[in-house]
Image (cartoon, rainbow, N blue to C red; front, side):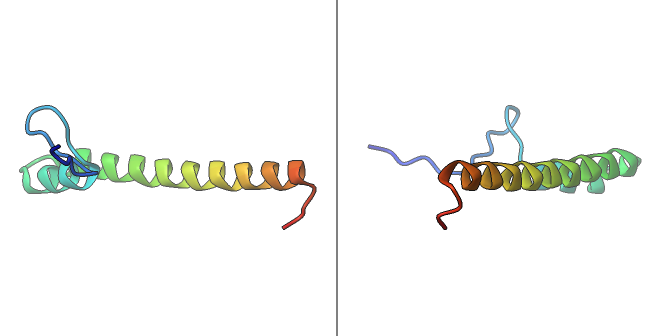
Length: 67
């Protein structure tokens, strides 16, 4: 059975954020788009962190702070 890599980049179909940033930085005149993508990535990371923290707090409340 063939193994698929966890992070896959299919040319023309999918793209990772770092690869998209690199492509935009290397493209003349696309610095603003690269900065916009960077800001979106930072916001997404912060929202994920906040959501994770919220889920942790909710689970601790439900478990009665046993941990």
